[in-house]
Structures are given as structure tokens and as C-alpha cells.
Length: 434
Image (cartoon, rainbow, N blue to C red):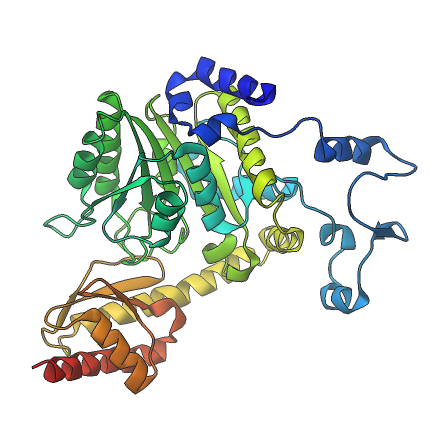
């Protein structure tokens, strides 16, 4: 094993042996090279005032070489903020701005110890880093039974982890913290578990309320006190889109400092929050009482980034930073939030209006981009296909009964027509199946 990896491991094990035990074999082996092209280039950037012949970019007239046909469309930006490689951890100014934003939006982080956000190539990349660093073959990854299908690929297929599901809702249609606790305590013999908490939830659009949040903390603490080392990932892809009756903060703040056997990791980004899906700008942030562990985990994260994508895209990081720095940012965000909340409220009003009879129920939703219908007597895939073939309407079938509808991409004035047509398709499938 490389001496740098050994040094990082020794630091983590000395500061908190539980966190060291959470690392995968790859997580223990990975490190960020201190002697190599990047480190030497960084030193040259600071000291080589005459000629800098280190890194693989081209310079012309004292700035990064570029094509006019590209720069003409980006003339508001300095070429140095577009064409050079971004640091593997992301633009320092962007990392600082995101940390400031994160603290402002999550007051529970005040006086907590957590790292500087590390830029990722959006949220999937952040989750992939978590999987690489902490998931070995056979490790349990605990998620609700209403989940984003990419978890299976990221943790199961790529890393060989065992996906353990529990029902998202309890009998009162609230978050099933007892189910989470049961799934966690069942891993006692393994001594380790990875928990993914995705709120607002994809596909249901559900975020727990404050009391449910406390119950989640209690379940995780119970597992830790039972001797289980728990990596807890808050997948905050849709953070901020909280419309009613839910927590308005990430659970990351409550998780920070909760227990020595719990390692909180926040994965978030501008992707959904700032409506820049194609920019692919995300972040991964660790929380632990030890600054030394935070530093070591950052180095290991940079090692993963260096070994996979080298660094994220510089232009989109610059675009997001400029947006965060703009005095219009908050106002424009509020405008978009109001539109999204209006769509969610319209959907709820339609579904609660009694016009669709008893062909479906719907899972509780209060946030995010989606909601999920639960069809009573018709097959979700048959309904999805009917909608697509007969009406040119796309939805997502999940299992036999669930139909996910992304109200985020439907104008409010069209939602009534959308659900009327879904209802019509359900009826037609029901008749055809008799």
C-alpha cells in the first residue's frame, strides 16, 4: 500500500477507529498524490513567474488558448475562468460560497464540525464516491422501498453491496423510522451499514416532518449504540423545494456530531436546486468531530476524483459561482420556488377534489419534483404504455401499482388535462383487461 494511503489511514484510525472500519478496501487504498503533475503544477503556478511549462493546457497572449466561435458565446467570462482545468476539489471560491449557502439554509449546522464541500460532477458522482470509499461486496446499503433506481447500479452493481429495503411509509402514511431501525439492527452481525436518506424523496416527493426527523435520529443512534458503524448519506438532490408540512433543513445538520459510530455525508448540488441539470455541478461534504479525519477524507476523495474524472468542468462551476454571487439570485430562486409550489398545490387540489373516483390513491407528497399514484385495479406499466401510445403522455411506471408523475415539467394550466387523461387511460386499461 502506498505510504500516503497508510498515513491517511493511520490518521483516521487514530482519531476514530469506527470511521476507519467504515472504509472499503478501495477507500483504505486510495490517496491523493502529493508528488506528481498536479502538485508540481500547483507549485509552479504560484512560483513560476517567467515560464510555466508544467500542465497540459495551451497559452496564447497570456491567457488560455481558445476558439473565437466558443468565446463569442461566453464573452461575459474571463477565459481563465473557463478553459483552465478546475482544481480536483473544485474552484475554491465556489466551495466557499456553497459552504456559506449551506450554513445559511441549515442553521442546525452552526457550531458543528464539518468539512469544506468538495465539487463533484453532480450528485450521481458524489454517490459514486461514497460507494467507492465505503462499500465493499456484501456490505448492506439500506434504502426505502420507494427509491431512485440508480442506487442499485451505484452501490449494488458497481460495488457488489447488498441492497436492503424497508417500507418508506408506516401505517399512518408517515416516514417508517421503525422499519429503518429494524433494517439497521438486522446488520449487527456485520457491524456496518450504509444508510441513504433521500429527501425530498424520488419518486414520491415526500419529506418527513420535524418529529419524524427526531425518530430517524433515534433509530440511527440506536444502531450505533448497538455497535454498528453507520455511514449516513443525505442525498439532498431536491433540497429547498419544501412546500408544506415538512422539515426545511437537511438531516445532515442533526447528524453532525450525533455519535462516534455515525459518519454523516451530505451529497447535494446545483443540479436541481438551481435548475442547471446539464451543468453537472454537485458537492460532497463530510461531518465528523475531528478536523484531521475531515482532511484525510478530503484527500481520499480527491484521490477518487483524480483516478476517475481528474477534475470537474470549469465553465459550469464558474457559471454557478457567478449565480451565487449575484444580488438577484435569491429573488429569482423565490420566483421559481413559487411556480413549483403552485404546481404541487394544484396537483394536490385535483387529487383531493373527488373527480377521479376510487381508481387510485396517492402517496403523501409535500416537496420536490414528483408525486406517485398508487393504482388500485390496473397495472402501472399498462397504463404508462396506454398514455404514451394513445395520448403522447410520458409517465414512469414503478412496479405493478405505482405511477410517477413529474409535475415539475408540466405548466400549472396543463395539470388538469394531464390528470384527466391519466384517469381516462386507467379506465380504458381497466375495461380492456376485463
